[in-house]
Length: 568
Image (tube, rainbow, N blue to C red):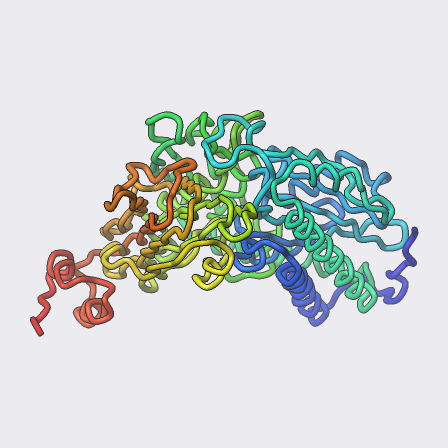
């Protein structure tokens, strides 16, 4: 089917400043509506409650126009996926009514759970834009919880195919899903929700084209990108030219006991940035790898945080002043068939380390490190009432963020990879799974000391009400969130299990398919953010408030801030 030309409704091509602003808000409104419709129609709590998804609009070349405020680390993966689909089919073979699908981890940069749909948007016979939606399926088949060592054990790999062609659904693909995932009804429900999201994006963009004319809208989009470029470059030029380096490390890959080194270099020459990730660890055996789109995203997320965090919509114009060196074969640019199930953890620490590198040269822009992990727990088992199989996720629990030159870090906030993702409300957890949330509170003394204190982590205790298997892949239990400019480190993440009447901490936060009986518990204590500046410079009023609110104990106040607490 050929859509009627919508450009003819408004022949003006050049967008004046008023129209640019209207269209700027328009594309953000479209992505917001895509996001809301996906939330309202999804079947799994990880989408409708935790918001583990991303939606976006793209040019006919696959460049980002507006990405919904979802997962920051997908800022590159979505665009690369759209471009890969264009290259696979060719523009001439993408028709109105088509929806393209893949979850190829080495295209998206992430794990197989991320099913990504793309719908072309036409003006007459010409593709003028794309709508795209990535959402996390809770079950994609594959191994249940153990650490995988290649992509083949992680579930279904969907190549780039047409989910819908000329409006007709690919029923064979739907049958393929039904036969290979454990919760097919929920998976197909989430697929329908994603279809609604990309159709919402198409409808919203068509309405903008009808109102302003496609030529005017496309010109406005280019002006919006030019503005993002100018703002980013202006801020980037404030940081002195030089070579800035930093390093950190991860606990390990769940297979060997060796830590994973993270080394980064930032080169600034006349305001042009090059972020070199050549020193990041080679890909590992365990499932903590991600592919090249994510390596580029690490650099882009850090660059945007430092140069233009408040400029919206997020688009590819922002990154014209950034070069990224990310050779193939690292933990953020892994080669096939590397395991990728837990793709998201290492990139967060890479972003924090990039910011750490430039902190001495730009202290007013930088922040201390944050807890940098989803800190989620996977559950699976059979319900005692109807024997139905359940699989679910508790989390992200949220943790402490690093302090900045402007103030204390945020408490119990979801990690940077997941951006606008929410934590799991206790009521929803108890409704969906046979567990009882006994505690979900701030973790006292977890924020790093400083002139500005790091945010506090969470203390979550969950009791099993029946037999179930629990798996955790929690990182950064050794490398605590560091402070900057004399600020102190926050507490590291920590995981413990309560079995046979006693608490036993996991040495590295990792467990695979541990069987819990009714009454057993697991505890996740998320890390706090690092501090900013010398603790001696923190005002006594702020320390007193911390103690009064229970954020800092009297003992810690005395030790860290030399602050005496009068006995009651």
